[in-house]
Amino acid sequence: MLLFQLIELLDGQIKPEDCKIHLAVSNGKENPLDVYLAGEFDHWQEWQTKKNFNRKFVVSLISMPEKNRWLFAGVHDSLGCKPRKEKSTCFRYNLRRRETTNSLCGRLIIDFQRPGRNSYLLAKNWIDQLHVSEIRPQPLQVAEFPGYTQTILTKKELDIIVKQQVPSWKSALSSISGVYVIADRRMGKLYIGSATGEHGIWGRWCQYAKTGHGNNKELRAILKEQGSDYASNFQYGILETADSRASEHDIITRETHWKDLLLTKPHGHNAN
Image (cartoon, rainbow, N blue to C red; front, side, top):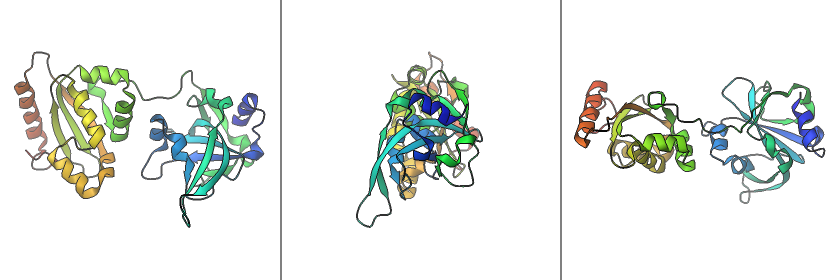
């Protein structure tokens, strides 16, 4: 089945000749799939550097990790735009989501080969190439907690999990103390930290989601120098969970072991 065959079954008013397709891809700063999972895609899409949505409807497709696969993010009425301010090159569109197609949002996967670098297509020219690959039973959402030894989170993923208080993550990380690592993907350096107390690693990582640095001296200095957006380069994982009988001293001792092993004081982001 083709995408527009399915859309027209749900809403006969939406015709390809009245639609602009928005192929949402990373702009170098933000991944639209992360933005979607955070529940902020509609607002993100409203801001455009050009008058890109000059049709009655906008059909939103978000690039997925798999090649030529796109997540359907809805159809919107395009109700005009206005510049952010006089002589601005940034425009804000008034986009209103059509409820008739909401049942497919986050569930419908489309196979489509993007033509070059163009992200704004006239739908009528591509209707025969937008193939429905899959209709998932549930909308795409943040992955459930995979286990302590399998945890790898980007800063954006951590922010989403904390903002949404994803139950599987909150329950698992609140229940344990231990030693964790923050990898700086830009510099290749590591920071080793530990978490103890009532809320365990969850409580500590919530601080990183809020500030980016968790009040760590070296991380705070980096963000002051590079800007707060630099925290998007951080990646979080768990090195070791603590036995329920372990004391705070025991955990700090294990933290020191990992710092020494991975040389994070002379060559990483640990100040001490």
